[in-house]
Length: 405
Image (cartoon, rainbow, N blue to C red; front, top):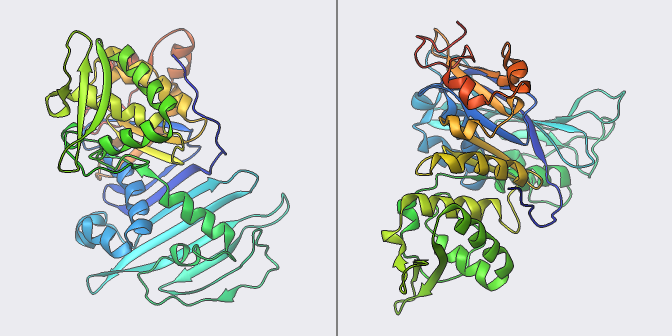
């Protein structure tokens, strides 16, 4: 079943990701990322680490580089074992009606504190132009071009930052004279990289409408309150789909308690009284949270979900995969998965298979680039079945390295 979200202006999309010296990601690149991308591979292959790259970059903008760095154990835990040089992340992204833009961030550590070794924004204007940096910084010192369409002939203006651990894009992106820098800042700060938990959904938060789920979903009652007040039709649509997926669910609502907290309750059709969310099944709560993300009236530009198959019935997973794909009309989605049932709802170009080489470094291949996979799918085979049969030849936990056989 395919449902469409409300009309919304298209946002920027990440087209490639290149990472060096970030834990197991010694040197790996993901080119031609699709709007809906799934990471597949054995335990320890680096799926969650790729996921955390997006979370790290988002937190650098939201919380600051120092907190994002310290949270991950600083250089000792974050940098690749036996690796050399800084941690570097490079994304190529495209805004509607603008050329492809590359954002590069390299971070290292000095006396226990992180510093921005290099940060730049680059694009090429016109088919015959050459790439040039319209923002270029090292350790808090650098230059940038103002204006909506920076050109190679424009003058780079020196704009020093207060500290070498500040991100230039985060600082300059707050000013109107740097609209392309501001667009990237808004893009990344708008990412929703989730770590949803059914237990978190059972909390009783203070009352007050909130537009979007937190990363762990502990404000689900607040978001239901917001949707009920501002987007009742959208909330009813979410409930309609939930009723199709979870038999006998009649309604979900958030009641205001005397202590000004919200109590999430779920009513089953056979019973006259609802049950509190703390007694509801994990699968019901997880499905509800996924639907609230996918049918957000103003969806974030990027959504990350780890292992959406957890607690859900296997037969629901191909439909969930299709709804994720439909949602990419207005957002970009990255998931990690171990489920052949979820994989059955995917296309070869949407799947990246990960494994670790003999040095312990993550490697990745698109499923559509693996020998014979496209032909088998064209003849009716499903990716989940091919994966469990060992047809991929990579990412197999029963093979020592998980790599090519």
